[in-house]
Length: 187
Image 1 (tube, rainbow, N blue to C red):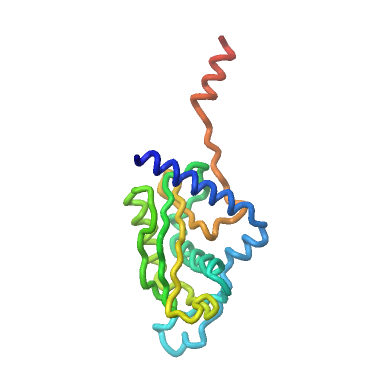
Image 2: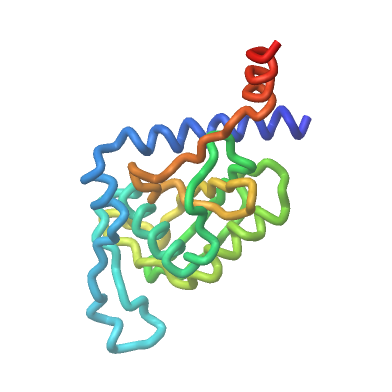
């Protein structure tokens, strides 16, 4: 059962990864660079988030939040991802109007508890996220979204919303196939 779930999630993760590379490079570069503005209230109180996202929609806000998370956890980031991922972890994240994390919960996983903890801890370690703009909040007190962590076999990851178009995909070599060809040529 775990193998079937893993294969399905890995295929979904690979499809998401390849879909990200279809976005034009300039759009990816713009999306990966958070458009943040200092909050005028930040100097008035240290409990107020010192930056506010200028995102006008939830997709752009997710990119800003993801960029903040990975900036704090750069030591855990994958340098490349294989075509078949070890695990795909999807978190359900709720952020209040000031950027405080209200909720971080597992939404979907392959069942690797250690990788689930890494994803959840990366969000918690980031602390406050960019405060959502009024356009993203749409009159609510918080914003809720799903974000995806793509894990390589070594436990390193990347966050789906901010994968650059030129992000390297490891080439998986079929050792058995290539040694079979060599053996066949010599026979």
